[in-house]
Length: 159
Image 1 (tube, helix red, strand yellow):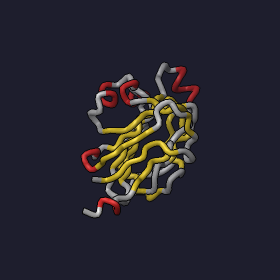
Image 2 (tube, helix red, strand yellow):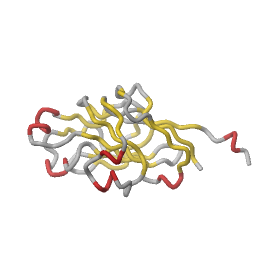
Image 3 (cartoon, helix red, strand yellow):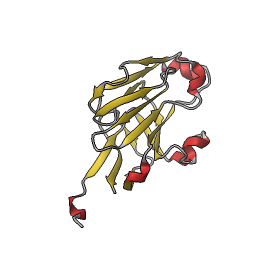
Image 4 (tube, rainbow, N blue to C red):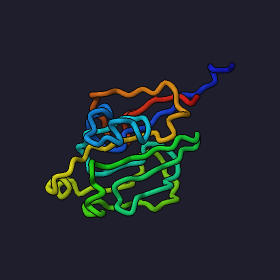
């Protein structure tokens, strides 16, 4: 009943690059959707922005990933790169602290792209809705080039 009242929500690209399907991420946790549903970006940028308004509830001590909770209850994880936890924070700079309320487009993590790539790490970044059981009708534009803070990345409705 009242399905017409269900609102569409979106996440904005947190970093410049090309949207790719999670199945193309060379990490089974993400490609197998074990952490949730979403997409990845084969990045070209060096600043990771908040993909929506919400609260940063977690930034891993190695600064390679952060989690947010949005006002609608959606929980998201942004994981920068593949196996970048092994860098122990080198090449990654935290720009906010846990508990910070952010707006879409606010900078969260700065990358030293050259350093990370010279160390042999991929900067494919996964954007995951970790409580995907509350989501329906998730859509994204695989293959599309996106600009951080400007272009839609994921569109979805809540159940």
